[in-house]
Length: 167
Image (tube, rainbow, N blue to C red; front, side):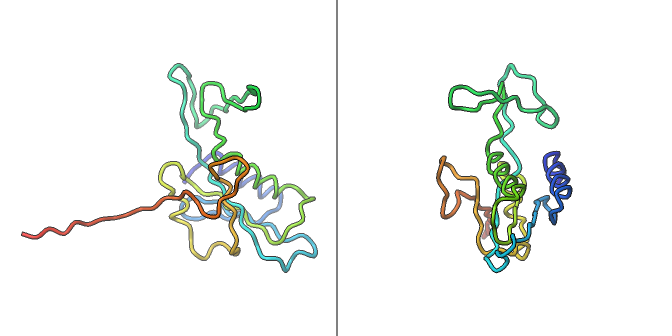
């Protein structure tokens, strides 16, 4: 799956010297080795989704495939002019990438998983290869409430029903 943000992040990760992979649905996996002395710690995955809810006001002209979001501060809130902000799950993605980039963070083996199309069907989560991640611990950064980490996820599921007809 083609995504400008995905291509940018892959390029950024390669530039930083991280190991980067993409799977068949477009998910990105970035690996960073443990810092010295932390090699025997359990690996951890920081997970976020790459897509956003692309909504705009009726009187706003905006092409989400190429136009930047125009953020501004309104009191204690960051908002966007005429569009959704893209903070779901942009802030989770930004925090995971910030942990990767920060050389002062002491950590065990680290994986950052960025999944595709969460907003439109959770294709990235459903298409994830079962043996791709090395970690047993995953922190999903897409919680519903500020300052909280969930022990689980809102998630989704797919169900395929085939009705049986009798004559």
